[in-house]
View (cartoon, rainbow, N blue to C red):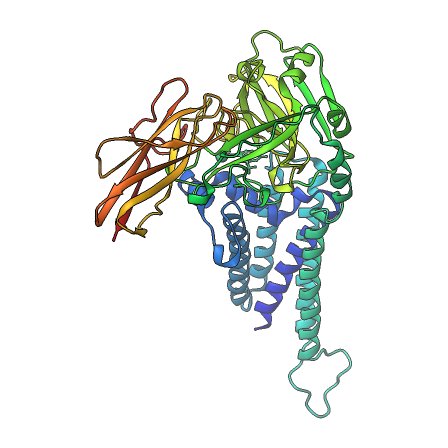
Length: 517
Ligand SMILES: Nc1nc2c(c(=O)[nH]1)N[C@H]1C(S)=C(S)[C@@H](COP(=O)(O)O)O[C@H]1N2
Ligand SMILES: [Mo]
């Protein structure tokens, strides 16, 4: 019994101290965090794709968050289970209990060392974790050995420790470990740390030329499409960051280096002082399934990435801009696309009128109209290296996704909803269509494989944003299915050939089954 408790408390101490030390020195060096990050990096793609769309709305966990919470809780449960097992064995052999703590410590240490952003300072937290876990183990075991059974008359109490005091000390240590863990979390997250800087930047994030207001019919939200602009709180989120990198705007530095004539370096203030432009751009994730919701639209304010590259002077032969985020995630974007004068590639600083929210990349992220997010939309941007595709391979390329990934011409059906029952007769179908940077020129819908019918389109706001469609269809009572297909401004029609998201985006016509009654 004692053995299990001692094992558990020792493991908790190690984890708590590791997390606290990391919070003080370098948040990414928390062994717990590093192990979770390693699981993410090594996950097979079926698991990753499952995680991206997993959500638990009932407990307030949207997609992009639910998978992360599940992983972190899962590792905690696994640790506790291991602790119980090790404790049961340690009851017989004390060295097993010790070995498990050393083993876990080494796993944490290895995970930290293999982080893509490892630095020497990152050794402190895993070492502190292992030492504190071991010392808790020895201290509690020594205490446990002095525990005597209920005092018998005449027995010497002096050096003996009561069972109760062992329990109390274990409980205090356990509670301390939990407190240390929470403390480390708060410190690492820089709670309150940068909100002042974020607020201070807000008034300066005004574009030189504000965009004209939206046209009156930019969406058909009244019949079930999304609003034209996605509120920040509803914007889809995709990243591999278990801990949101917290970068202080004061310390922010962005280097532009590699195959350039001149290396450049910018502070957050330098970027704020450049001419700011505003663009409405719809971001889309390559992992989006047909009819999926990993797509959102915002108005971004930031600086021209093309201007930055021209200032640095791209040397001949370079074909890739290799960007790295503060947490080590990497992304490769074709330089020729970024240098197109009318592409509008930018380093965004604001999203829908406020400085970037932390989960969407504060303080600086990339936005490139027309390319899927995994090859263009680096959040928490830390480094820009001009290089070649031969020389450096980005995060998702290493995992089987495409090197270049322009967004495909697509549409989605939002109404009727899947399996919905609607009154027979005239049925309003509605949805979205997108082909960023080419623009949408036509959307058609049909019922039960019948003739295609042209849908009405919302006013085009920009060829870089989605466009909404609605169509009035006539359906008799019974079960039906509806399909849609979009045509982009180059005349290319959305293909009916169904493909999986991997490697360069899903294709195929969306289809919804519904009942008219
Ligand atoms: N640092 C970092 N940036 C990232 C990613 C990531 O994992 N880490 N994911 C990319 C992917 S796959 C997409 S689709 C977009 C999503 O941006 P959002 O979360 O703001 O919607 O961010 C991109 N930028
Ligand atoms: Mo993505």
